[in-house]
Structures are given as structure tokens and as C-alpha cells.
Image 1 (cartoon, rainbow, N blue to C red):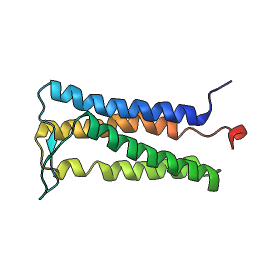
Image 2: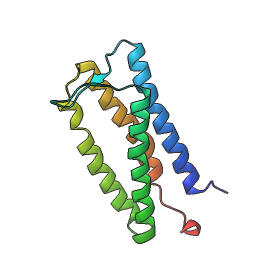
Image 3: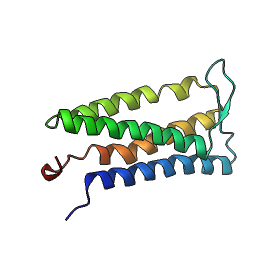
Length: 133
């Protein structure tokens, strides 16, 4: 018997939150100045709390989108979710390149996006078993 889909998705979301936060912590411990600013704004520290909260929000929205697709477009849910996730990932890869930050900080921000996607996408894209529909 396999675990319910919601449990796997919850575990993936928690893992992604921890991975993003720990990526920021490790970068800071390695001496990376984790300050970033959008053009014209004050810089913010991208530490564990900010990375964790943003990952929780983005991952939560991804989960909600997948749940809605499972409900209203069950036969195409995986395909539609993967297309949406791919588009969102591509869009999210743009801001680190125009954010005012050091090259090391930019590299860490990109790495955080990749790590989160690598954890969430395979789990959220997994087809829902027929018995849980």
C-alpha cells in the first residue's frame, strides 16, 4: 500500500522549504553576502526565514494548482501542471539576473530555485492514483 498523494506532496514541500533555507544558511556560512534588492528598492537579507517563507508560498500555490487540475481536468492534470510549472520556473529564473546582488548571491539564488524545483516537480507531477480521485 502506498502513502496518500497528499502525504508525499506535504513531505516534498517541507523538504523544499528546508532545502531552500539551508542553501541560504550554507551560503552565508561560506561567506556569501546574501543581500539582494530589486532595482530601486532597499536590499533584503535572503536568509533561512525569507527563503523558507517564499518556498512555502510558491510550493503551496503549486500544490493548489495541481489539486485544482486534479479536480477539474483529471485526464490532463499532469501535462497541464508540468507546462505551468515549466513556465513558472522559466519566469522565476529571470529575476536573479536583474536583482542587485553580488555574483555569488545571484548564483545561490539560482541554485535555490533549481533545488526547490528538483524536489517539488517530480512529486507534484506524479499522477494521482485512480482510487484517490
